[in-house]
Length: 410
Image (cartoon, rainbow, N blue to C red):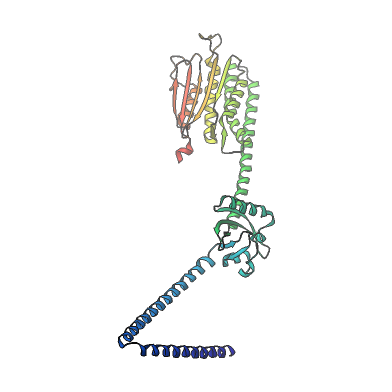
């Protein structure tokens, strides 16, 4: 009631002041008009009327500008205060100068309470270093910088957030930081769950490779025991070849078991192990040199197993037939078997070559019923779906080129 009375008295006072000013101006105008000729009075009156219209138009423009400013303020309220992310402005000392409603809701603090408080006050203690390094890097590079850390709400509950900070000029020349705070707790939780799930699957996959390797080792042990009971040399040889094929598969799983990457193996290391085991199995004498070249080549399980079998067959054939007893070279070169594997980004190329006596002239490798050559054709052409070629010049050289199945799927 008292407020209404005060407002009424102010209005009366303003009215009296306006009346007094009007009377003074009217008296002044009357005095001027008495001293001026009629034509000049008419001109001045015209100018005053035009000026009055101009003032009315300017007032209308001001009212329109004020209306538009009101709309902009409403938009600002919607875009800034009700944004889905928190906005805060920091001074050079890291104190909060301004914050939107979302930021106050994220921190569970009223906006008035946030002002002049350091943002570091809301950072989890263990993540303080991340925040200070973030600000230091921002100052050094002068461009937007982002970091992820945990923020502590007023109720003591923490959440994961991303801070995207940009340096901007302040009102009095000092730089300020505009910080966008995004709650990424859901994403972080999903990330941690995925990592835990991946770790579990890696352990299971490692166990699978370990068990397959052990089962194949049992099979090889049984084969070795069977060989001990045999008297005929051809039977022993056939069983030893079977043992070599099983070992080539077991080596793949052993490599995957001991590798940090369970999806592929280092083929250079695999071939070196495979050739070493084959030399021991066939009691290869030192007169034959075996060269392996597959540096930088990696292969997944679906390709490595058939490739291992393919190479095992060819190297075994070379051990048995390329350098027969009593055969002497016409040149001074060493008896050599070369195993090489290359990868051009889309296809593998495997070459197994020897500089021995070569295949007999009457043998058609593409149709022969020999177990070894049948396996070579089956693995190269059918299982790996590659192009298989034979070069009989200067010994025997088989070359297989194939595109891995995962590339075909793409």
